[in-house]
Length: 183
Image (cartoon, rainbow, N blue to C red):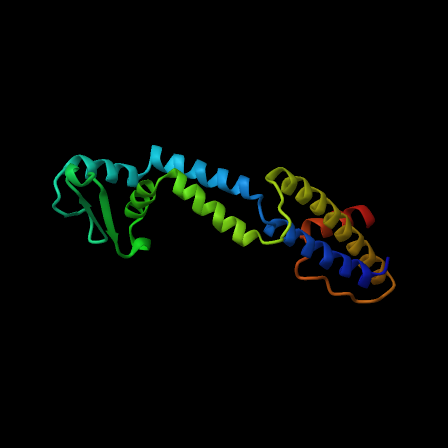
């Protein structure tokens, strides 16, 4: 194969690697990941501790502020004892965001995650984590072989007196390995 063909194959293989890295996960796998993250959030997070403190602090109907960002109001039991929140600047207070996520509940978070992932997936093919690992391993091996071919072709051209610049993305380890084998 000529150097130009090898480089075109390297570019195509690199694009294929990027597509695999960016492939949509199956919706169920994505929802399971969100659910596991939610469980971890409930089990051990500053938001869980914040929420536990809020719920233990006052059972009345007066609002109290945990931070300037989160205001929580508990309604009296005669009105269902509902907890309401008003939130400002979510990105500035992780514990407040975690507390609101916990209040939202696992089922609602899973439903929203499922709806989001289904909208995002569209008709794109999904790839499980195991499929992704296998495909990445195969593609990286194929790319490595192409890069070896590229360096061998460059050395052959240079032996004939031609100067050939290397790609900036070329793996130095591959270059050195081929030099060791060829020279």
